[in-house]
Image (cartoon, rainbow, N blue to C red; front, top):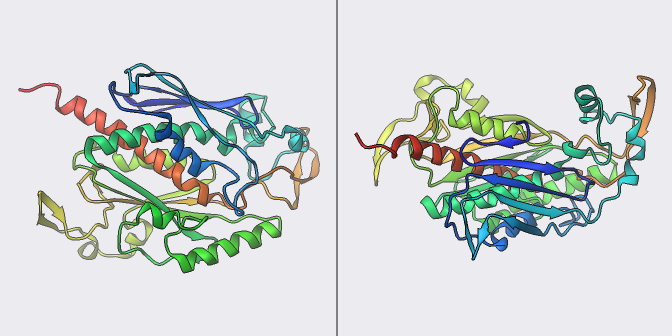
Length: 363
């Protein structure tokens, strides 16, 4: 189904931006997992709107409600249903979008596909849909941390033309959360914030890049052909609103190297085999090799801006649109936790598939 993701650990998100609520159903969560609403709420708080002066001013508490799947503090193995109610919806701000298509938004394509669309904030095309992903990702993150100590950390490396220097260490959560833009390099973070504020003051928007690093992933996750680990990570990331690019390891810059420069030599490490370098980004032949996963996602500038733009209406007639409503002038700071959530969902699903295939039978 188009609203579901994953094979063994499967999630189905539901709800619209200005409907009564949004949420997710998780099927395949293992039983006896200690889980409380607070485990989920921490990540929802990092995603919620109105948390700083460089995000949308929409005010939502985004308090999660567990409807099923938990009994006496543990999961039961039955579907987990998680709900977040919408409180600060203002559908009247989108009246003009009922007739006019917003440039570079999903208005026209939704109409072309379904013959009907929810113009209030974009309905399902709104990034508010990602609440369900973040809630489910928090559950997946809890499983990974208990199963093998997997640690996932995403952070902003670029905003428009402002770029942070490469990190020489795995950043702490405190370093990432030190500023509203979630760039762990403080001098660069200040420039990024100024760039976002400048764009917002002009009624415009900017894009950026998020890097994600994961440590503690064992060798062996992923499949060698269609369900390659990097392919599923790419699908997960490019399913997010406003994404336009994905690269892993050396990515596109790797094309500038020769094989002798790019190959990751195998070496002996504590606990087994490792690599001297990590241009592969932790994946070789579609399967994790035990090194850090390292990948990057490009986010376009927010499509809805507060400047007048030329467009057409639902009748195909030339029109002019000046959008209203409340929008992020740059989506990347709030997308950091969403990237982490999708990463956790991919990894826990592959972990379960690996265990099912390789540890069910003994020959």
